[in-house]
Image (tube, rainbow, N blue to C red):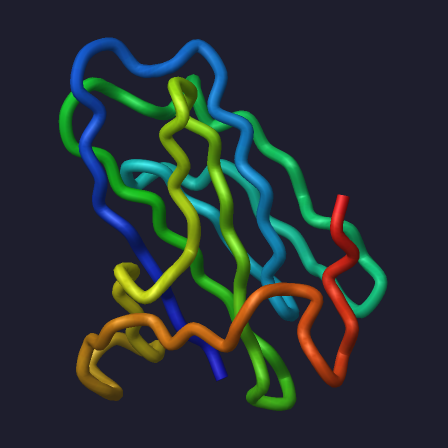
Length: 128
């Protein structure tokens, strides 16, 4: 199973000088910012969150974070958290949109939130 989750957000004024993002995608994932591929990886039980600074890809005005992820056994998910500075955080939650891939195979919908990590029964990802 593969799906894409995304969040549109606005930055008023100049983009931050630093925007560290933490990500876990089960099993493999591709991270895009404003339509540009920024990072990809594979993660599994016991792996830490991946940290990527997204500041160079952010711009004033409208922005989009998009993550494609998939799993061979159909049980996939993702966690995302980004610090935009000044107390502003962007985190994966029910305000994100999601759609199964290929696009059109099911309607777009709000992301489903399972709870806070580490997740039972897997006990991962390992928190920093």
